[in-house]
Length: 314
Image (cartoon, rainbow, N blue to C red; front, side, top):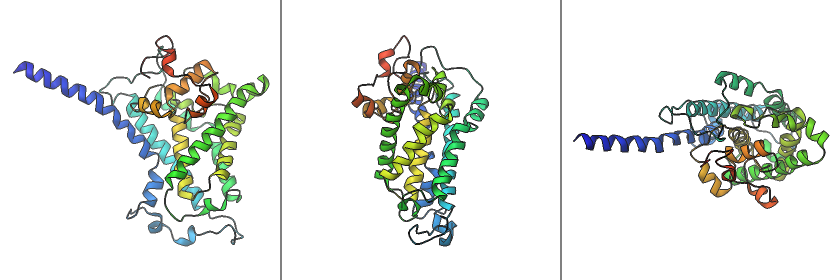
């Protein structure tokens, strides 16, 4: 009887070890909380239930006044809520709440850099070259009527195909800009991207820690180009923006996530893929997708550096 109980307890423990970490996958719907809540039919938070149509109806071709700020405000709220929820989920993951008290597997074999979590959060949110610059870009392009007309439309819900199209276009252009920052000249690299490369073993909170020139070249210019390539409504733009900001943060994680092996199969970017770039500089210039590196012959799978530099199975 005792042996049977031991077997059952062992089975239960191993099952929990396999299932519990997947709670962290809640980070993906969490980053879309605002656009999902405001566009799902029947939702008490549906935008038509909360706001009078005067607040959001706007035709850039006919209306001469400035755009209504509601779309901009909700977009900023979507990113902010997504970031807060993502950081909460990551905190639970980092401190072992989803791994039965054990620290998750670090990407690099020397282990994750030690730091105080509250310091990391404050550093992440206070980066002037990160969220401050993104706010100025979003506010300027929206209120300055610099976005394609479709972006000011509240009609329809989230267009998922266009969300994916925006992510791919953004990452493809960002891949090109990333390579140019490395290769144009040593002087340009020094003042643009090199400050971000001081992190050879990055943590999640290093995602936007770089330079103003780096953010302009590798994030803002691709964002504006993407907006002019993929025309979509405000909800699609919102979903794309929140997914992009949060995914870009997640790939700087010092730990591997439960879904990473699946992402490797499809060529989606993982923390280990991006750690390869931070550790060795000349590989894996892509962020969200590894497709452009595969086409450009610059991709290296993290297993190539295991077990000396990286842990196995990351």
